[in-house]
Length: 228
Image 1 (tube, rainbow, N blue to C red):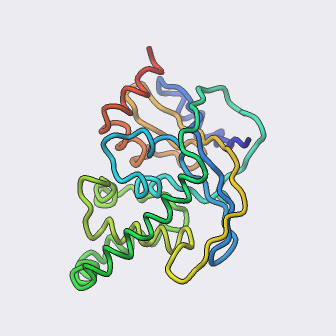
Image 2 (cartoon, rainbow, N blue to C red):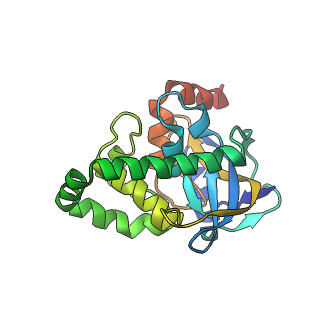
């Protein structure tokens, strides 16, 4: 079992707000595709959300490259620990389904997709700056594109395809060999009004986590109970 270490400076900033540190359940997946990769996948939010669908695409939103973090074998900060819902097998299946969806949708709408991408060049360039971190850009245009299940548009398709191919190394013609899966926990600082900070990653509010938790009634209730 592994714990991602929070950034101490970010933690000090977050503690100015009334909130609680949550240890979000993840799996550290080690696999070989175009190269050897170690990726963290959220093993709770995509599985308990009743609003954001399909799960396979939501899973990608919360994928993080492991090399961007340091790890320890025990908690370095006290906090509430949620339980894992997803299994490694479920995560592997989600990646396969997401890739199949991208191939099917892109091939079906190739002409209109290519036209739309040219029109959305500014968005594409913004995404390029962030894609290797697998951390969604904080521009409003990007965060709106992640309303999976409500508005699967051309921009969303472009981003999902980019995550799979460039971020995860999953694309047509490449065999993925899974080596191992390790239970892990990822630190989130959640304020009383459900603003979420990824305290091992960045000092700004995480729009991906904040938007999904606040807009999903079930998830909102899940986290509000922490403050009762």
